[in-house]
Length: 298
Image (cartoon, rainbow, N blue to C red; front, side, top):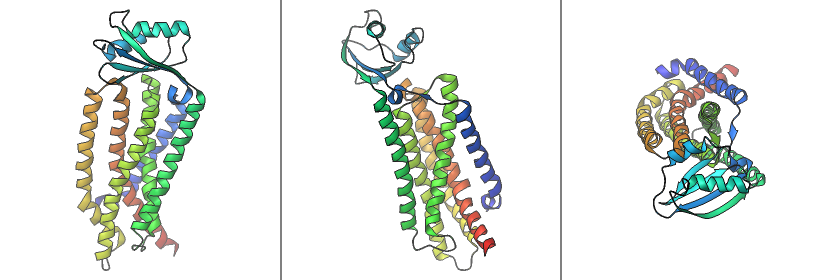
């Protein structure tokens, strides 16, 4: 019952974190990658051994080629995303990738990514997030249709979506700091991370909501807040340990994985952490708050 008794404190913490994240988006706008604003995509395959990605990254930072993103592909290849290149810049790119001829390579593909592709990706990403949110509300409303008192079933879905927004907005706010200070860019992996956070977070919330549903069925004259508090006590450790397991794997990916997935792993780690927090300290206390407001309005 500690969480429910102090729900206003935890709800305030979430509100402050969300407001700070939104403020950061205005103070430090996200840097958009070429996946969304257009650029050039080059794929190369080395004939023998592939140079270390970190070494190539360091060299490209000294060149006047703008932002260059290198992603490993296969055992001997790299996919390189950059700004639009003229012929001289294209030659310089290939020369740098081959380490001035020390690492022979073959250029497999070279394409330009137009801004229209970026606009299409943006549109699809927004549609995907909206459809996921609506599907969550409908699914939870259906699953909880037999539990309509004291809180309507659709409100469980609504609170889950509020938690999801909380879980996505805060990592995005943290990503703005990475974007401003370390040059991290919004690309397709960023969108994948946001959608993954939605899926992981809602599963955690549904586990706790399902425990509330089971206890409501067995409750006689128990107060709703007591039922929610008991449900949290019965399920929060499971959520914490499950999330901790995933976070350990993600941190391993961040510290030991390739450079191209570091920001992806870091954003997912933040999403898992705040997703667990919202499932325990936000979604359920919000249900109790709604029930209390309903009683006051009667």
